[in-house]
Length: 472
Image 1 (cartoon, rainbow, N blue to C red):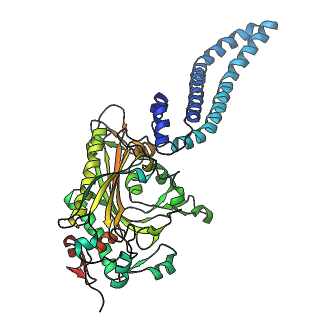
Image 2 (image 1 turned 90 degrees about the vertical axis):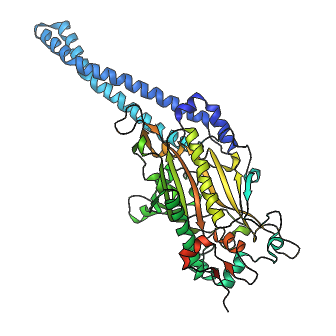
Image 3 (image 1 turned 90 degrees about the horizontal axis):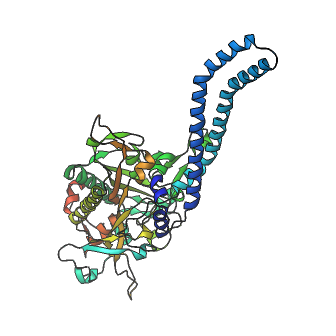
């Protein structure tokens, strides 16, 4: 959620920010409702002050009037009785007026809050303006020594590559037919060494972040309450991508949702809390099963393991102080961790600066990391893919957007510190999402004889095995 005070001060910043992100929001209506709400609140405060004053002063006044009433007669007596009645009735009148304003306020709040939840965080000024992912720009690329990304796989390795679908079928690493039978389209079963390689990547990624970079490992729920999805910015815009568990239809108190990333629970853990500044930064890493409906997604990417409904992901999350320079520094570090991870596995990759139209609701900036996959890209004359990049990671800088929605704050100065609390900043980035990461692993490390070489860092997690060989 955006800072309403900043919206009042500079509404054009949020108008332009929404337009650059391709969001349609009614800023004028928000400002109108906000002004009306503040007017009601001012009237409430005035009436409450008057009620407090009346409660304090009416008793002595009524006492004096009652004393005069004993000696009064005729018109004077009637006037005193009317004044006493008015003084006695005034508190109830004020109470009723305050209640009426509360009802009026209650009628405004839902509309205002709903509109506020639809306003995206404006992109940072240095994010390039664009309409879609087609306008993203390449920052850098890396490939291992001896592998030239300007050349084809055949030119680099001396043979035509197989796609990951061919490799998993020939090596017995996955069963797509039975996966579809079990769960429907875009489901799969990882089998044998495919399942072991999947687990090896996840365990290596978790240990890489925990042991090498000091992140705290967490095991978190993947079934979450709606307020967690709203608080982390995945709702309302992304409701069509989430699996909905309709518990209320079965008599339970609230519906639940399957999380599409461990980020939801890692961030939601401290919702509503006031942290001490000394606790920051919080650096968490989790491995969790993730669920995405991928509603509307279609095309060649839906084949195989690239775009699926259920996967496992190692996610890194940082919660830091409300300082833009610190947020930017952490963003750079988190991207660096992933580059180091990919290089250790010998996977060619590139960094992409996402344009404003590809940022989404909650990001001030986002950098995608894409691995090069020989089985992607345009087809050659023989109908074989020529290779191409595919997204495997996404690093987001969100400032206080999520923390404001989650009411996650810190108190400057440490324990017992004085002064107002401040909303934290948050960042997140994928470390490894599998089985998608298996696509470049298998395709890049395949050999002419049909085997696949297992990168050195993964071997301790797969019984020391160096290769996966075709079945005889």
